[in-house]
Image 1 (cartoon, rainbow, N blue to C red):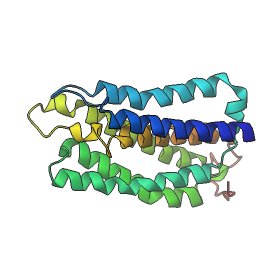
Image 2 (image 1 turned 90 degrees about the vertical axis):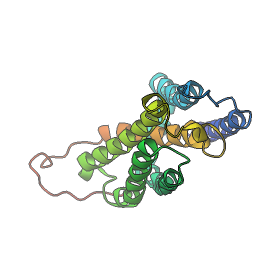
Image 3 (image 1 turned 45 degrees about the horizontal axis):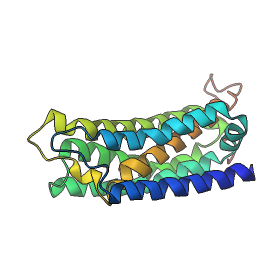
Image 4 (image 1 turned 45 degrees about the vertical axis):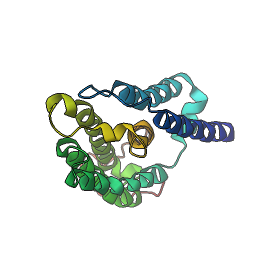
Length: 210
Protein backbone atom coordinates (compact mmCIF):
# COMPACT_ATOMS: atom_id res chain seq x y z
CA UNK A 1 0.00 0.00 0.00
CA UNK A 2 2.84 2.41 0.82
CA UNK A 3 4.13 1.97 -2.74
CA UNK A 4 0.83 3.18 -4.18
CA UNK A 5 0.67 6.02 -1.66
CA UNK A 6 4.08 7.33 -2.73
CA UNK A 7 3.33 6.84 -6.42
CA UNK A 8 -0.02 8.59 -6.16
CA UNK A 9 1.49 11.54 -4.28
CA UNK A 10 4.20 11.84 -6.92
CA UNK A 11 1.69 11.71 -9.77
CA UNK A 12 -0.50 14.37 -8.18
CA UNK A 13 2.56 16.59 -7.86
CA UNK A 14 3.48 16.06 -11.52
CA UNK A 15 -0.12 16.73 -12.51
CA UNK A 16 -0.12 20.03 -10.60
CA UNK A 17 3.13 21.18 -12.24
CA UNK A 18 1.89 20.16 -15.68
CA UNK A 19 -1.39 22.03 -15.19
CA UNK A 20 0.58 25.08 -14.06
CA UNK A 21 2.86 24.86 -17.10
CA UNK A 22 -0.04 24.51 -19.55
CA UNK A 23 -1.65 27.57 -18.02
CA UNK A 24 1.55 29.63 -17.95
CA UNK A 25 2.25 28.85 -21.61
CA UNK A 26 -1.34 29.88 -22.53
CA UNK A 27 -1.96 26.52 -24.18
CA UNK A 28 -5.45 26.39 -22.67
CA UNK A 29 -6.55 29.77 -24.05
CA UNK A 30 -9.26 29.53 -26.70
CA UNK A 31 -10.41 31.99 -29.35
CA UNK A 32 -13.37 34.33 -28.87
CA UNK A 33 -16.74 32.57 -28.80
CA UNK A 34 -14.99 29.21 -29.19
CA UNK A 35 -15.68 26.29 -26.84
CA UNK A 36 -12.73 25.70 -24.48
CA UNK A 37 -11.79 22.33 -25.94
CA UNK A 38 -8.21 22.33 -24.63
CA UNK A 39 -9.44 23.18 -21.15
CA UNK A 40 -12.08 20.46 -21.29
CA UNK A 41 -9.54 17.88 -22.46
CA UNK A 42 -7.15 18.86 -19.66
CA UNK A 43 -9.95 18.48 -17.11
CA UNK A 44 -11.25 15.16 -18.45
CA UNK A 45 -7.95 13.33 -19.01
CA UNK A 46 -7.01 12.80 -15.30
CA UNK A 47 -10.46 11.39 -14.53
CA UNK A 48 -10.23 8.95 -17.45
CA UNK A 49 -6.72 7.87 -16.41
CA UNK A 50 -7.89 7.31 -12.84
CA UNK A 51 -10.87 5.27 -14.04
CA UNK A 52 -8.73 3.04 -16.24
CA UNK A 53 -6.13 2.53 -13.50
CA UNK A 54 -8.81 1.79 -10.91
CA UNK A 55 -10.50 -0.74 -13.19
CA UNK A 56 -7.31 -2.40 -14.40
CA UNK A 57 -5.17 -2.66 -11.27
CA UNK A 58 -6.35 -4.66 -8.27
CA UNK A 59 -3.48 -3.33 -6.15
CA UNK A 60 -4.31 0.30 -6.88
CA UNK A 61 -8.00 -0.42 -6.38
CA UNK A 62 -7.32 -1.95 -2.95
CA UNK A 63 -5.22 1.06 -1.99
CA UNK A 64 -7.90 3.52 -3.08
CA UNK A 65 -10.67 1.65 -1.26
CA UNK A 66 -8.58 1.61 1.93
CA UNK A 67 -8.50 5.40 2.15
CA UNK A 68 -10.59 7.12 4.81
CA UNK A 69 -13.94 8.30 3.41
CA UNK A 70 -14.08 10.82 6.24
CA UNK A 71 -10.78 12.42 5.22
CA UNK A 72 -11.68 12.39 1.52
CA UNK A 73 -14.98 14.10 2.29
CA UNK A 74 -13.34 16.72 4.49
CA UNK A 75 -11.16 17.77 1.55
CA UNK A 76 -14.34 18.97 -0.16
CA UNK A 77 -14.58 21.69 2.50
CA UNK A 78 -12.22 23.77 0.34
CA UNK A 79 -15.14 24.35 -2.01
CA UNK A 80 -16.40 27.13 0.23
CA UNK A 81 -13.99 29.18 -1.90
CA UNK A 82 -16.78 29.12 -4.48
CA UNK A 83 -17.75 32.55 -3.15
CA UNK A 84 -14.97 33.81 -5.44
CA UNK A 85 -17.10 32.88 -8.46
CA UNK A 86 -19.98 34.92 -7.08
CA UNK A 87 -17.66 37.90 -6.59
CA UNK A 88 -16.23 37.56 -10.11
CA UNK A 89 -19.75 37.52 -11.52
CA UNK A 90 -20.57 40.69 -9.58
CA UNK A 91 -17.53 42.40 -11.13
CA UNK A 92 -18.55 41.06 -14.57
CA UNK A 93 -15.34 39.09 -14.97
CA UNK A 94 -17.30 35.85 -15.41
CA UNK A 95 -20.84 35.34 -16.75
CA UNK A 96 -23.44 34.96 -14.03
CA UNK A 97 -25.10 32.03 -15.84
CA UNK A 98 -21.93 30.05 -15.13
CA UNK A 99 -20.41 31.64 -12.06
CA UNK A 100 -23.49 31.87 -9.83
CA UNK A 101 -24.63 28.21 -10.05
CA UNK A 102 -21.01 27.05 -9.81
CA UNK A 103 -20.24 29.35 -6.90
CA UNK A 104 -23.34 28.71 -4.81
CA UNK A 105 -23.18 24.98 -5.54
CA UNK A 106 -19.57 24.78 -4.40
CA UNK A 107 -20.32 26.80 -1.27
CA UNK A 108 -23.19 24.47 -0.36
CA UNK A 109 -21.00 21.40 -0.76
CA UNK A 110 -18.06 22.98 1.05
CA UNK A 111 -20.15 24.11 4.02
CA UNK A 112 -21.82 20.72 4.47
CA UNK A 113 -18.69 18.63 3.92
CA UNK A 114 -17.54 18.65 7.59
CA UNK A 115 -21.02 17.64 8.78
CA UNK A 116 -21.21 14.80 6.25
CA UNK A 117 -17.68 13.64 7.08
CA UNK A 118 -18.38 13.55 10.81
CA UNK A 119 -21.88 12.07 10.80
CA UNK A 120 -22.51 10.15 7.57
CA UNK A 121 -19.18 8.55 6.61
CA UNK A 122 -20.04 5.03 7.76
CA UNK A 123 -22.26 2.06 6.81
CA UNK A 124 -25.04 3.21 9.13
CA UNK A 125 -25.69 6.21 6.86
CA UNK A 126 -24.85 4.69 3.50
CA UNK A 127 -27.80 6.22 1.64
CA UNK A 128 -27.26 9.77 2.90
CA UNK A 129 -23.54 9.58 2.25
CA UNK A 130 -24.08 8.40 -1.33
CA UNK A 131 -26.69 11.11 -1.93
CA UNK A 132 -24.34 13.88 -0.78
CA UNK A 133 -21.49 12.53 -2.89
CA UNK A 134 -23.80 12.42 -5.92
CA UNK A 135 -24.84 16.04 -5.32
CA UNK A 136 -21.19 17.05 -5.14
CA UNK A 137 -20.48 15.33 -8.44
CA UNK A 138 -23.52 16.90 -10.10
CA UNK A 139 -22.35 20.34 -8.96
CA UNK A 140 -18.91 19.84 -10.53
CA UNK A 141 -20.25 18.40 -13.79
CA UNK A 142 -22.86 21.18 -14.05
CA UNK A 143 -20.22 23.85 -13.50
CA UNK A 144 -17.99 22.39 -16.22
CA UNK A 145 -20.95 22.10 -18.58
CA UNK A 146 -22.06 25.69 -17.99
CA UNK A 147 -18.52 26.98 -18.35
CA UNK A 148 -18.08 25.11 -21.62
CA UNK A 149 -21.35 26.23 -23.20
CA UNK A 150 -21.72 29.77 -21.84
CA UNK A 151 -19.98 31.36 -24.81
CA UNK A 152 -22.06 29.35 -27.26
CA UNK A 153 -25.39 30.11 -25.58
CA UNK A 154 -24.64 33.84 -25.28
CA UNK A 155 -21.91 34.83 -27.77
CA UNK A 156 -22.26 38.52 -26.92
CA UNK A 157 -22.22 38.01 -23.18
CA UNK A 158 -19.33 38.04 -20.74
CA UNK A 159 -16.81 35.37 -21.85
CA UNK A 160 -15.38 32.65 -19.64
CA UNK A 161 -11.88 33.36 -20.95
CA UNK A 162 -10.71 34.22 -17.43
CA UNK A 163 -11.01 30.51 -16.60
CA UNK A 164 -8.33 29.64 -19.20
CA UNK A 165 -5.53 31.72 -17.64
CA UNK A 166 -3.81 31.72 -14.27
CA UNK A 167 -4.81 31.57 -11.50
CA UNK A 168 -8.37 30.55 -12.36
CA UNK A 169 -7.27 27.94 -14.91
CA UNK A 170 -5.99 25.75 -12.08
CA UNK A 171 -9.58 25.21 -10.96
CA UNK A 172 -10.85 23.33 -14.04
CA UNK A 173 -7.59 21.57 -14.91
CA UNK A 174 -6.57 20.50 -11.39
CA UNK A 175 -9.04 21.19 -8.58
CA UNK A 176 -12.24 20.08 -10.33
CA UNK A 177 -10.98 16.71 -11.65
CA UNK A 178 -9.21 15.97 -8.34
CA UNK A 179 -12.35 16.68 -6.31
CA UNK A 180 -14.43 14.65 -8.76
CA UNK A 181 -12.06 11.71 -8.35
CA UNK A 182 -12.41 11.96 -4.56
CA UNK A 183 -16.19 11.80 -4.94
CA UNK A 184 -15.86 8.74 -7.19
CA UNK A 185 -13.65 7.03 -4.62
CA UNK A 186 -16.15 7.71 -1.83
CA UNK A 187 -18.99 6.34 -3.93
CA UNK A 188 -16.99 3.19 -4.71
CA UNK A 189 -16.27 2.75 -1.01
CA UNK A 190 -19.85 3.29 0.11
CA UNK A 191 -21.19 0.86 -2.49
CA UNK A 192 -19.15 -1.86 -0.75
CA UNK A 193 -20.56 -1.07 2.69
CA UNK A 194 -23.00 -3.73 3.88
CA UNK A 195 -26.68 -2.84 4.01
CA UNK A 196 -27.45 -3.74 7.57
CA UNK A 197 -30.55 -5.57 8.70
CA UNK A 198 -33.14 -3.04 9.76
CA UNK A 199 -31.83 -0.25 7.51
CA UNK A 200 -34.49 -0.89 4.90
CA UNK A 201 -37.12 -0.84 7.62
CA UNK A 202 -35.88 2.52 8.86
CA UNK A 203 -34.37 1.36 12.14
CA UNK A 204 -31.79 3.81 13.52
CA UNK A 205 -28.21 2.63 13.33
CA UNK A 206 -25.03 3.98 14.82
CA UNK A 207 -22.41 5.13 12.31
CA UNK A 208 -18.86 4.01 13.08
CA UNK A 209 -16.10 6.52 12.47
CA UNK A 210 -14.21 5.76 9.31
